[in-house]
Image (tube, rainbow, N blue to C red; front, top):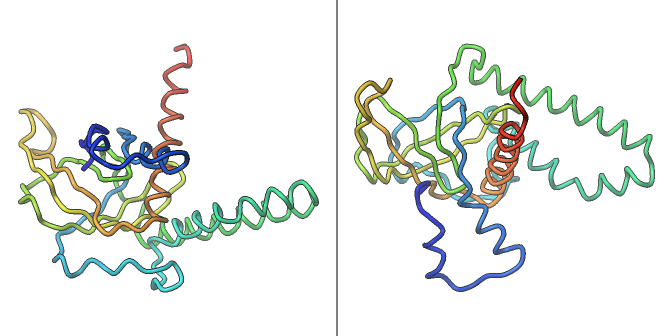
Amino acid sequence: MIDRQTDDEEDTDPVSGRDAEKERRRYFRIEEEIILFFREILPDEIPDNRSLQDLPLDPFSLSSNLDLLTQESRKLFRKIERDSPEISDFLKVLERKIDLIGRAFLSYEANLPEQPTQRVSLSASGLSFDVEKPYVPGKVLELKMVLQPNLIGLIAYGRVVYCNKNVAGSELPYQIAVDFVGLCDRDRELLIRHVVRRQLQQLRTKKQPSE
C-alpha cells in the first residue's frame, strides 16, 4: 500500500547492498499528474506473471516494454559508445525513432490528446487517487497508467486497501488506495526508476530560485 511506512521492514530479515537499496526505493512516493484508466475486475482475471517474451503484444504497454529493453542494453551501449562513437550516434538515432513509434502507438491506443491527467500519489508498491464512487476494500482493479513526461504506458493490477470520504469541497467525493498485486519485477523496476527520477526532478525544481 502506498501509505505503508518503512517501519514494516524492521520485521523482515536484514538485506544488504543493492537489495537493501532496491527495497528502500519501493517506498519512495511522489505526488504527480498521470493519465489513468481503471476498471473493476475479478481476481481470476489477473494474468499470470510471465516473461516478457510470453506476454501478448499490447499497444498500450509497448512503450514500457521498449523502455525496459533500452535499460537492458545500456551496458552494451556504453561499451559501443567508448569504442565506436559513430556507431553509437547512429544507434541513438534509431533509439529515438523507435521511441517515437512506441509513443505513436500509445497515443493512438489511448487517445491521449483527449485524456485529462489525474493527480495521484504513486510508489512502486501502489497508488492512491480520487474517485467518483466508493470501492469496497479487497476489490481488484485493472490500472492503465501513462507516466509523464515520457508517455510510458503501464498496465498493472491492484487491490483496494481503503476507501475514504474526501473533505467537503473536493472535486471527487472519495479517495482510494490500491496495493499492486502480481506486479512483475521488470514493471516494478520501471516504476522505481520513474519515481526516483521524478523525485529528483521535483527536488531540483524546488531548489531553483523563483524569478
